[in-house]
Image (cartoon, rainbow, N blue to C red; front, side):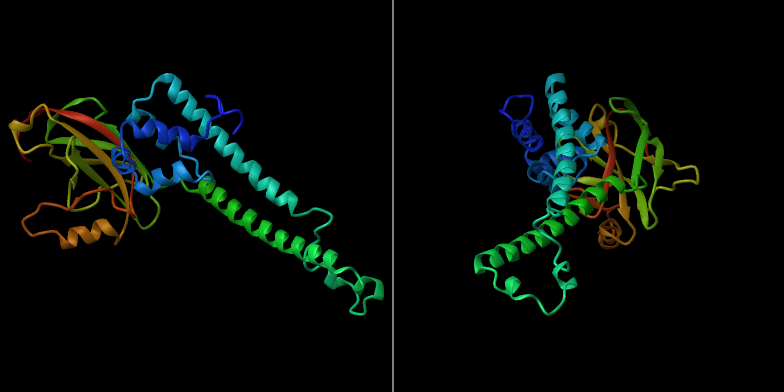
Length: 287
């Protein structure tokens, strides 16, 4: 990790330091609409690199200074480059001339010469250990490549963005939110709202948001219970959830007198890909 100066600190160390002064892992995950396990992985697992949108959300939630933000972004870049280097090293070390693949010796005749069978036991053990290390190195490389490849090729289809209203806007309720989305087959778009200071997320409707063939959507929703909530702030999340998953199950099991489903955290099988914060300026009635 270099000399430990501010220019080469590890991403997970920096994230943990900046977060601890403001949030728990769970609270930060809720604030940016991610799972707690995502924050845990980013802090502890050096093979994980955040998506640019996730990194931007983390910086905003932690209210980092320009210098701190630049340091965290640079650390994320170093982690990504280090991951690529580790994969190459693991692959190259496995092709060392002294550690031939296990099938190499099998290509020779079964009737080995006496000099080969008379090799000292220590040399034989070294060769066996080398083959074991080669096998382990191959597994490490394949797993690392799979993890890196999964992050790089993860389709952008699981993405939804709120274009209107915009974060920081005073809004009238009811209102129409709209945006864009590109969904993988078997996934749907939902909107979640959470009053600032509350720990409960509320689905804004009992059915998913309709996304048209151009990847655009619009949804009518109500913020607040009445004029008494004017001046309150609300977080609005675009949630991508699998069909038949936790969101659908929560709707099936909700109490009959409850308008829609509620959650104490973002469902584990879903992802909030975008969120904004607005202030209720005027409550004009229910639709």
